[in-house]
Every structure is written in C-alpha cells, then in structure tokens.
Length: 350
Ligand SMILES: NC(=O)C1=CN([C@@H]2O[C@H](COP(=O)(O)OP(=O)(O)OC[C@H]3O[C@@H](n4cnc5c(N)ncnc54)[C@H](OP(=O)(O)O)[C@@H]3O)[C@@H](O)[C@H]2O)C=CC1
Ligand SMILES: CC(=O)N[C@@H](CCC(=O)OP(=O)(O)O)C(=O)O
Image (cartoon, rainbow, N blue to C red; front, side):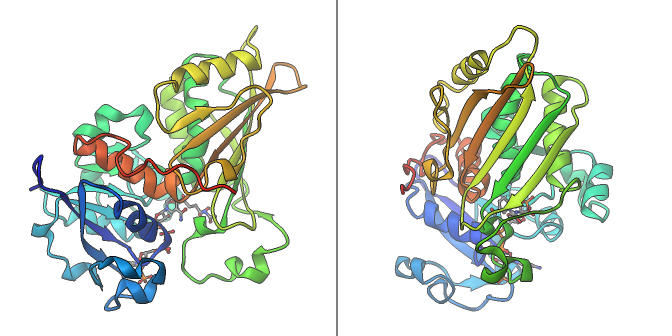
C-alpha cells in the first residue's frame, strides 16, 4: 500500500488508446505516482516506444494483457477501456486497489437506465452501489471516500459545469435547455472506424447520435439531482475536424428578473476558488484553443435576443478535463493529495 512517503503505484488499463496515452503523458510529470503496469489488447506484447513513439524515451513498462498484471503491486488503476469491457474487469480486482473508470460503465446509477442506453444488462450491479460519480467540483466528499470513481463523459463534463450551479441557484428554468455540442475526433478513440477516416472528417462536419446519444441520460441524471426534479434536455453532438477540444453552446431560459450578467456572476462566484474552472469576462467567447492540453474548463455567458434567453459557451479538452485529466484530479482526491498535482500544465496556445 502507498503511504505518505512512497509513490502511488499505478496501472493503466487501455494504455494503447488515446486516453491511456494521455494518462501516461500527464502521470510522467506527477511527483506522487509511479507507473507500474500498462495494458493493451491487440497491442499487448509491444513496448510503448513502438505504439507511441512520443513516449518512447521514458523507460515505461511494456504493454501486457490485463490477465498478466500483478495486482498486488498496484495501489490504483485507471480503466481506459471500451464500455462494457470494464465492468467485469473492475469487479474482479482486489479490494485494496482504488479505481478510476474512464468508461461509461458506472456513470448511470440506475442499472435499468444503463441497460436501456447501452444495450445490455449491467454485469456488476452490486459494485455500482459503491461508485462515486466523479465530476470532482461537485462530489469531492464522495470521491474521497470511494473505492471506485466513475469519471464523467466528456460531453457531460462540458455541459454540467455551467448548468449545475445555475440550476441549483434557480437562476435558469429546468425546461427547454438546448445543448449544441462539438467534439474533436480523438473523442471517438484510436480504433480504426470508417467514419473517423481523414477523408470522412476533414473539410466538413456532421451531427451524430441526433436525439439519442447516450450522454443525454448521464447529463439528465446529474441535472435532476441538482434541480430536485426531472430535467429533459435537447442534446446534439457534432464531430468537427480537429484532433482535440470540445465546445458546448447551451441555450437556456433565465428565471424571472435574472440577467446574463447575473448568470455570469453566479458562475464566477461558484468557481472562484476552483483551480480548473474559469469564467470569461463579458463579451469574451471561450475557444477550444484556450484550454487545449490542459485540465481547464472555460465558460462564457451572453445575453440572447429571445425573451429571458441566455447563451452559455463552455469549452474543455475532451482528453484532459473530459477524460484523463479529470481522472487524475479524482485520483488525487482519493489519495488525499493536492488536487492540482500533476495537472498544473497551462493550455497550449495556439
Ligand atoms: N477519447 C475521449 O475523448 C474520451 C474517452 N472516454 C472513454 O474512455 C475509454 C477509453 O477511450 P479511448 O482511449 O478514447 O479509447 P481507445 O479506443 O483509443 O483505446 C481503448 C483501449 O482499450 C483497449 N481494449 C480494447 N478492447 C479491449 C478488450 N476487449 N479488453 C481489454 N482491453 C481492450 C485497447 O487496446 P488495443 O488498442 O491494444 O486493442 C486500447 O488500449 C472509453 O470507454 C471511452 O468511451 C471518456 C471520455 C473522453
Ligand atoms: C467524438 C466522439 O465520438 N465522442 C464519443 C464520446 C466520448 C466520451 O466521452 O464518452 P464516453 O466515455 O461515454 O464514450 C461519442 O460520442 O461516442
């Protein structure tokens, strides 16, 4: 077990994928962590230098199959595996290991809801009961005590950060929220898929999952908890021809007498002591470039011309605050480390 002087011994399951590589990149700079195991499926047996030459100089462990991992030598595991494969892996881990799961397997607290949206029965229902939803800024206590943390999806992270405080403070109406979201292509993972070929993605952009994307119930689950009643959102994701980055343009209806300046002030107050969430000054529109390769979220609020309307623009890097960065933030909380440890990297601009 890790103690206050020894590093946390970490394993990354799915280290040959995009979020796995991003975890490695950031954990290499984390002073409290030692990377002890890296797994892959098709790429198992290869050195990291072959799969990711940009990480070749760091003397990392080689990629092995999950079955080959020496669990007794680990304190924490990041699961960067596809949905559905993660449940059984986590359920079988020794209980001394703390887990941050980047997949969607434990995000929906209701197994029936999970089955509806993911197309199969949940295979670790008992474990689901001890999972904390890891939108860190809203569940530090839960994350601190949890053995398993469900890291939120990238679209939910980008959408919930602006919406939760506004719903909690009744600054906006729970009805009629429209989330128009865009993601870079790395959001779809490294697996070869026809729709992610350069020829299919470049010089154009497309909506997908229109009206039925599986992040909708995740967003609504958390908004429901904040509002204390059901919240139905209209959510449409788009794929844009860039590698990383995510933007949610959110249309809301304000409560009577509330202005866009009030929304901005509420968010600025809620996040004033949060290291990873910032609000732009009036008139400044966030761009994905403002958060690239960092664990930052940036939010802008604008008046709309419709009655009581406001427009919120929220950006994150899908691979960092939307995945691996937030996962490290959660690990820091679980192990009682400074929350920003290993995550101080400023955004890469341009
Ligand atoms: N990309 C993103 O922006 C975000 C991703 N996520 C979630 O994080 C998880 C990882 O995503 P991402 O890194 O993009 O995915 P990738 O497709 O890039 O990587 C998947 C990883 O899982 C391994 N893998 C695939 N199938 C199996 C299997 N059956 N058993 C064991 N290992 C397997 C792959 O190994 P190999 O390649 O060797 O076969 C690879 O290392 C997913 O659940 C995703 O939904 C969450 C938020 C954002
Ligand atoms: C561009 C793209 O394809 N993005 C992925 C979302 C990735 C992610 O955050 O979500 P999960 O962990 O829930 O898969 C998608 O829409 O399926």
